[in-house]
Length: 606
Image (cartoon, rainbow, N blue to C red; front, side, top):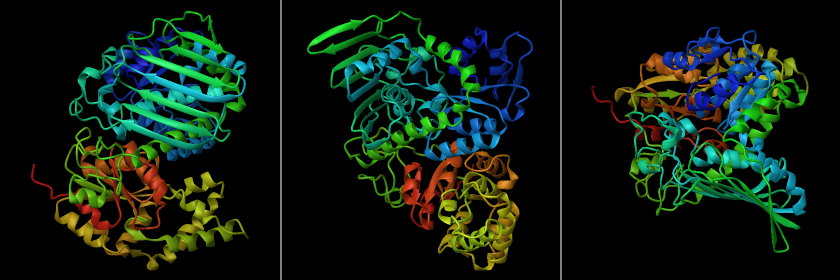
């Protein structure tokens, strides 16, 4: 059991301990008290502080129930080590993390399983069995609306950098997974959505039944995620899907509603997903045709039995070769829809409501000239015309990616890649554009993802050194770095290059000594998009995650920063893919190096 918070102690451990097919052999959590409390007086259970201490010889499965922003990083570490992983929803937070999980599953040969319990409910299965009776499905309506149910979860659940989003990520994932049980795997060709935050900062709307602890610095008024999301989808087959996910509302009880409309009838399920005690007294399923409704009998079952039922199927899934890649495909589809909903919501915001997930150029009512200029979120969410994602602490450190941010190396990389490809692979056009999609990662990892020979690294590195004299600093970057130093900001470079190559290049350009530390991907256990390299930079710089900004030109850079709970700034002055960068929802958008200065006022003593 990895992670010993509410989900582990209230959902998973009791069911694992009572299941004949499972033996809990290890618990993993950095908190010693949490480990001791979870294990109690039972002997024979290993109590570990990190997943790096696990091996495939010790466990046959790891169930992951850690905060959202750690899901992909922890699962990738385990999968790469050959340990099958069962990940609580949301499996991951963005498309980059989908790629990360896919690469880890291929590298370690272990399977990823996804936890989303709704499809294992008896009432949902009864609905699924009746879908054929409605004829051709035309529309699916999905809603999970709580009366009062905003989670606190030690503060991380309502922080976008740590949770990835609000009700859409939390409740919406279950609803989208349920849609897949009705329609099967589908591609959404049209997605439009809106989000709002009317309840998220009200203490009266919190989920008291969860008994979450209050965390310092995360009290009311500081959440920066949506509490409600509404969207409308159209599939490639012309089926429409409406979705409404809300943590809080003006309703009296928590309600989940699934309605399937077809050419020959309609079926409607009214129930309550989850563990809230403020629920519908029992599930009801009706089948309506030609003006007549028939009530379908449903079995009574205890709240939460779907989780035990899910465990029943895990051993068979682990042994089924078809399971490999299935969870990642499903996660990719759900993440794709969620990203499109947030994109649509961002573009549709007006100055009459709190602005969530706003980026440069989208803020119709800017807080300050500096914040409008660079696109950084500088006011509290929930205030009129405000922008979510404000920094809680002054910026004391900046962590830079190297290629595409400090140095313009694209032409040199293209030539070095072409030479290496010709030497190792042979004739044909080198897939440099595909290579660029993975920039920010360590070169051997990119080769593995692309299915290219690892032998390409040696000639690529050789040619990169040979052509290094042609690499130049971006205009204005040296001045910005010097000004940041003058303001007392600590500086580091965290790059996909090896540390030796990065330091050699910066030394050649005459700016190596302006950085406090330069860290290469070969100097951490797990390169980008894992958080290791950013966490190492924070450790060396001696700052907290809330006091740092990571500047990168690739989605992997942003994912690494977000996984480390560091503000992620998208640098768009090079050849980065702006659409993909904005889709990753950075905390700041920088269109020229000088924009960074607006985020970094002079550091004051103390």
